[in-house]
Structures are given as structure tokens and as C-alpha cells.
Image (cartoon, rainbow, N blue to C red; front, top):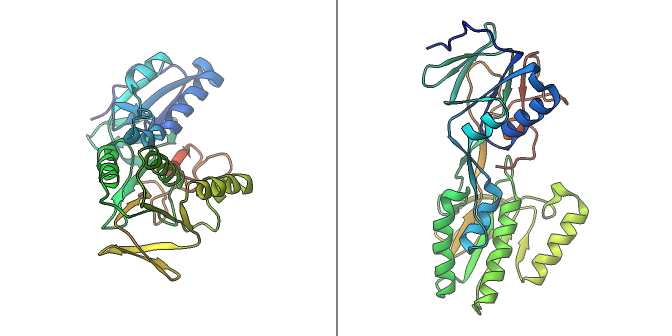
Length: 295
């Protein structure tokens, strides 16, 4: 099913794939910089944009992960929103095909589809965002009821966004202290050589002080391999026992036929975000191969 193209669009046709931060920032920036010289369209599988960073606060009743209608956001900037999931790209004819059969022509394509979150430890509660708020709230209830003695937080060593693990651990320690709950050991296991090292030495020093103040144990340079029967096995060596284990997901890029992707589904770009070897396709956000992800 093809889009009716009998009426030529006003300006360069820019098709943006995705409905997250990278997609919306691209839309806003292009409209601001190029004004009416671009015809903007957003293709995304969800009808809402979720502000996911606040999801770590939801189990503690400290905030809410707000969501906004993509149709309203795009209309406010003179763009169009089309629901659908990108399946393939015909680079020769410059047509993007959605899974529902819709064909969308473009002059320039921006891939900002984000990444899919995959659990990687069987015996862990995988915290992906708003969908896992209630499960984490139940874990907190068990900890306050004395059913948890050691609570471990961890995340994979590649294609992950580590910040929520530290936020959840610190918020949990604060909550238990406020409730007068003692005897719960909180542990963070990280593949990083220093906590939040991606943010630089000052950030690592600050988080190290916070963890020490809150009595949170830290194991650095340890990659989680598997979790079974209350034991987290680590590489290059070591084991950590747990009553409850919370893991952040492993991130993988969405497969797109016609687009070169690495073994993890990410798209390589140059310093300007252009997909390597392709003149009219760009990538931004988590689907790009840049190692820092927001998940």
C-alpha cells in the first residue's frame, strides 16, 4: 500500500523513524533550522512519547513517567505522524516500508527507532521502565517486610545504559532507611572499572561517595554471566549471592531490511550521523553504534 503522492510535498521530504527523544529532537531541530524548507513525517509504532528517565522514581511514589501524544506533538510543529513499524528500506527507490504494508517515500531518512530491551539474566527482575514499576514496587514491599536480606543490582557489559541501576539502588537504600528497615544489604555489580565512568572522573568520585554514605557495596570490573538458585556468576571470576536480583536489560537494535547493521543490530555512522556509505540516510539515538545508550 503506497502513500498518495499525487500532490508534491513542500520542501525536502524527511522521514524520521521513531517516537523517542532522538526522533523528536531531530524533528524539532529540523523545523527550527530549516523552517518550511523541509516536509517532516514521523513513523513510530507507539502513539505516545514516554519520558522514561522518571520511571525509576515511580516505585517510590516520587514522580511519574509522563507521556504525550505523538500526533499532537508533530502537528504542533507542522509535521505528520504515521503509526507503524519500519520493516525495510528500498534505498534505490527511496521508499520505507512499514510492517503493515504502508510505503513511505523520502528524500532523506533518519533512523531514530531506538533499541529493544532484552532480559539477559533468567532469575532477575529486568527493569526496563514504566512497564516494570509495579514489579519493583512489590520487591520493595518484600524488603520492607523482612523477606529480602541481600538485594543485588547489575547490568550487561555492552549496549546498556547504567544510570538507572545506581538510581534504583540509591533510592532503595534511602527508602529503607526512612522506613527504619535494617539488615538489607544492597550490592551493585558493574562491568565498569569505576561507577558511571562514561561521565568522567568527577561523576565517578561523586557516585562513589554517595554509595559509601548509603552503605551500598560496589563490585567493579565484573561482568554478570548468569544467575541461578540465588547466585550471580561473574567474569572474569567471582560469585555473588542474592535474595533478589534486579538487572537492567541488554539493548539490541531493531532489524531493518536494507540497512547495514552490526551483529547487535546497531547502525554505524560517521561524525555527522550519516550512515556509513549511504548519502541520504542518517541514524541518531540508541540505534546508532555509538556506545553510550539511554535505553
